[in-house]
Image 1 (cartoon, rainbow, N blue to C red):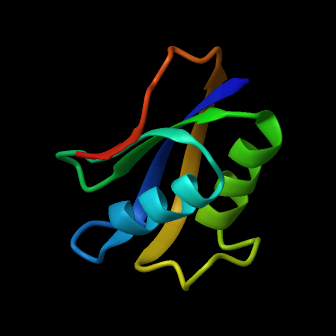
Image 2 (cartoon, helix red, strand yellow; image 1 turned 180 degrees about the vertical axis):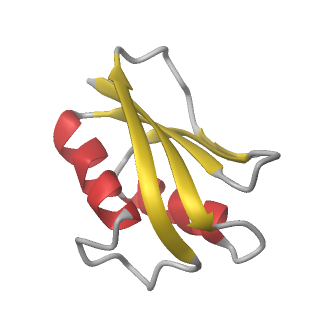
Length: 93
């Protein structure tokens, strides 16, 4: 099990991006959150098996097919990897 915190930069607010992240995370069996930040970024936290978390990251970058097209436009993603903290579900904040 692993935890990814990803700060997603680009046109990612007001376009349904957080809800898309939630749907992809749930499809992959992940828990965590997607949160709008005041500076226009979205912070994505995902916990689960490494392979599934890496799959979500590839979907954020649009490098792997997703259930439906990713909304918005991602310019860059800053990643931080660590130990899981025991998230229980996937929340949109």
